Length: 128
Image 1 (cartoon, rainbow, N blue to C red):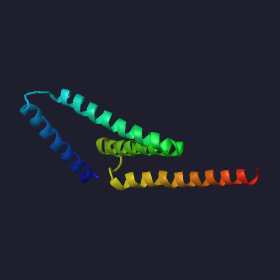
Image 2 (image 1 turned 135 degrees about the vertical axis):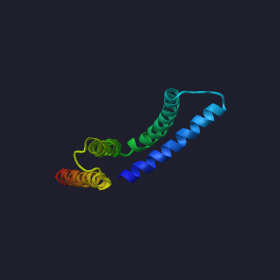
Image 3 (image 1 turned 45 degrees about the vertical axis):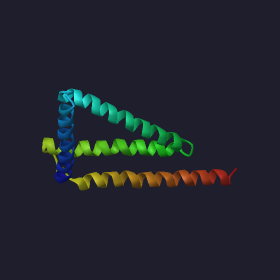
Image 4 (image 1 turned 60 degrees about the vertical axis):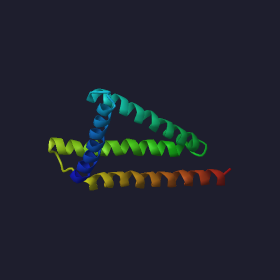
């Protein structure tokens, strides 16, 4: 897990350093806070537009799909936060396997939920 975080950190540092150099080369001289403001703002709005278009497409077929994607995304953030918290506090071991097992737990629980939904719908149609 620590190796994965180091890889992500080195990728982010690479982009950060090159963005700082580019802004200086263009004569902009943004400080770190201003760069965060512009980069995250731009990244966020591009991501929002893509996600919004995708969700508009999905909602035609299933609101459940959107709920699943949102829930899964929140869980990814949550399990990473838990593991990072364990590393920082020393209460438990920070392991990537814990993240994957936790997310698999949600996927299995969701599959069981869908099974019950399909059975309930089938019984409802059968008795109508």
